[in-house]
Length: 423
Image: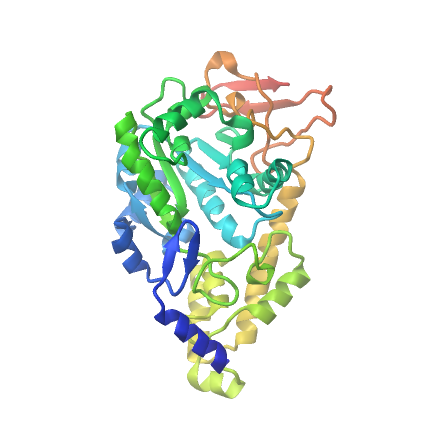
C-alpha cells in the first residue's frame, strides 16, 4: 500500500499529458479547461437541458462526468427556437470488445438522442486503425463489425441512427468535403460534423448544426475542425466533453485496451469482474480494519467509489456509501462488493442486448440510412438496415434471398405516418 502511494505521489508531481494520442499523469481538469480554452459546463446549462427536454439530467451530467463544452449553449439556443441538430460520435476499432470506458460516450449519446429526439451518425474509423496499427484491412473491418455490435447494443433509436465504416462509406459528397478540408489543413476528422457529408440523410439541410459528445482528449482534433468550418461555409460543431474513466489501478490516466487488467470489458464473466475488482481496483481504504475504522477512506483516490459515481444511478445511495466509507463505518470489502454487483448487472444486460444483434444483419455503408427517418418520402426502403435490439423489434433475414419486414415510424421527418420497410 505504501509503495503504491509513493508511486502515485511521484506520478502526481509530473506534468499531465493530455492529447488524442496519450493521456498520462494526474489530470487537473480546471487547468485543462484553461489550457484548451473550452468552457465549464455549469449548473445553469444542466438545468436548461432539463427544462427544454422535460427529462431529468443524466447521471453523467449531474455528477460532472461531462464537465466542459464548446458552444453547447448555442445548440440549446437553436433547439429552443425549434431548429434541429444532429449528433456525431465514433469509435476507432482496435480491439475485439469494448471496455466500460468506451461505453461512457455511447451511453451519454443515447441519452442525448432520446432527450432531444435528434438524428445520430456513428463513424467507425477502420481505415485509420489499419494504417496506424499492425492490422490488415480485413482484420480492421472485422473489428469494426464486432465493435458495431456493442455500439448497437447500447440501444440507440433505430429510426434516427446511421452507422458507417470509413472503408465502406468514404466517397462521393463525403470525400469532396475531405478534399475541401485538406486544402485548409492536412487532417480530415472534421468531415462527419458537416451535414453535407451525408446527402442521403440531410439533403437540403446544409445548415444543420452538429453536437459531438467526446472525451476531452479529443478537443485538439475538433478545435482544428472548428477553425476550418467557417472557411468552407459550415457551422462550427459544438462539443460536450467528459473526464476520463480511470483504469482499475488508479486515476492518473484512462483505461487501456492494451492492458486487460486495467479495464472491465463488456465480454467479462461475473467471475472475471469479481476477480478484477478484488485484485486490481486501487482503493483509498486503510490496510487494516482497525485503521479503516479510525481514519476512514480517502475517497479522492478510491477507484471503487469513482466507478460507482459513473454507474450507480441512486444519488442517495451513493452519498450514503461515501459518507460511511469516508468516515470508517464501512469497509473496502463492502464497497467493492457493491461495485461488483453494479458492474455485473450492467455487463450482463449489455450481453443480452448484444446477443440479439446477429451476423445476418448487414454491416455496410448503407446501414440504417433512408429508412431510419432521415431522408425524403420517395426514398424510404431502398437500403438494408442494422437494427438495435433496444430500439424495437429485430427481424434479420437468415439468407440473402429472404426478406425483412419492419414497421418503423419515421419520427424525424414524418412523425404522424407509419411505413412498412421491405427488403
